[in-house]
Image (cartoon, rainbow, N blue to C red; front, side, top):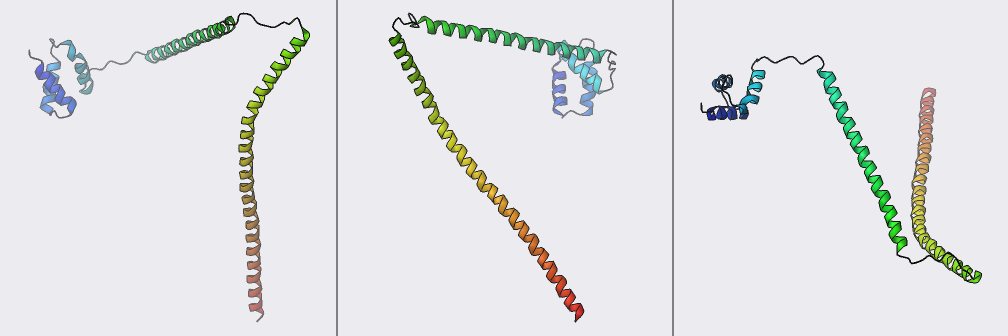
Length: 193
């Protein structure tokens, strides 16, 4: 049998251009016993769409799906833990190696002095370097404090706008009250006349 006819009919069916006769012909061809394996999925689809026998799911299907989901989550979590462990060990080794190479380049550390005056001078030198480094960082802090001061001034301006609005609302309330009193006085004077 030449199965190219079935392929063309299925293409028309999936494109939505097939007729009822084409669909009937597809069903007849898919029911044949000598159907190639490439058309098995199409057979199942057509049987399901055209009243074929669809088996009922097993009673434990929901439990099996949930167990499979739980198992896959466990694999993902254990994979993440393994990855985090590997990364943390690698980071620790990197830190140790960086210290090793940093300290290995120096032939010997000068941490003791025989002459107290020389030790004092070296200590003062190190403290001045530390002070200069700290003062370098303070210049940036001054810039940040200027930004903070400007923000505070802007907040004052917006806060004063709120005060002005409250005062205007109070004046409007007084103005409305005076108008009501004037209307009442006019009505009373009309009644008296």
